[in-house]
Picture 1 (tube, rainbow, N blue to C red):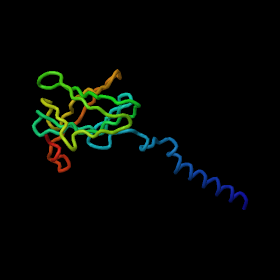
Picture 2 (cartoon, one colour):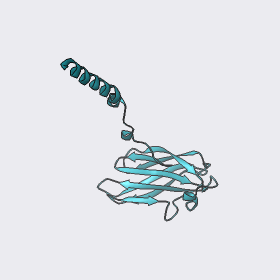
Picture 3 (cartoon, rainbow, N blue to C red):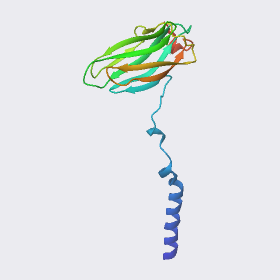
Picture 4 (cartoon, rainbow, N blue to C red):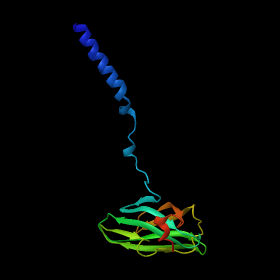
Length: 153
């Protein structure tokens, strides 16, 4: 009788280990950072650019829609530089310490001469102060979806 109990316990432990054991070696998807929406994210020093997209119907002028979070202790001026039809162009925005600034929603954050068709990725170089900047490939979307229709410049 005792041998049967020991065998049952051993069998239960083996089944439990086999069924749940893969959880010990399988990576958890919730620990992976990824861009969960249509836009893209970037971190430059204490500044985060969140869910950046460019909305354009004609591929000539675009509205940069993003949130810029300043996690630093000082106000910063963030530069968005891109290759336009006229050469290098840049647009700037100032963000106070500890603040998040939304661009392109209440009023258009216009990028002129973007030369990027909807469906493409537009390279934008983001930089502030003496921090090393980063090139971000920002998706260009059109206004065909209702959530973007009001964002077309």
